[in-house]
Image 1 (cartoon, rainbow, N blue to C red):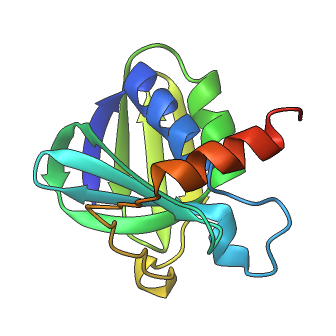
Image 2: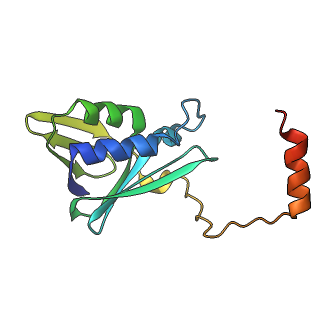
Length: 143
C-alpha cells in the first residue's frame, strides 16, 4: 500500500472515523481504523460493533492495499505533523509515514481481521397515524 494525502484532509477524516471507536473495547482490533487505498481515494472505516463509520477522501494512490492502524496513535501522529503532503508506504506488518523531515514506522494489523461493516440501508421509512402522533405529543409535551 502506498498513497499520499494532505495533512489537513487526513486529519479531518481521521477525526470522523474516530467517532465510532470505543475506548473500552474488549477486542483490540476495534481500537483501530481501517485505511484502504483504492482507486484514487482513501477509505477510512471504523466500528464499535454498534456504530460504524465509513468515509472516503480523495488522495494520490500509488499502490492499492489496506491496513488497520491504532486510532489514537495515528491521530496523534497526523495532528503533530507539519502542514504538507503525508506519504504512507508499506503493508499490514509495517507502515512508514513520512512528511518533510518526520518519519514514523508503525506496526499495523491485517485489515482482513477487522469485522466487516454492515451495508447501509438506503431507505428507512416509518408511518404513524396523525391521531396517534398527536396523542403521543400531547402526553409527552410537558417533559
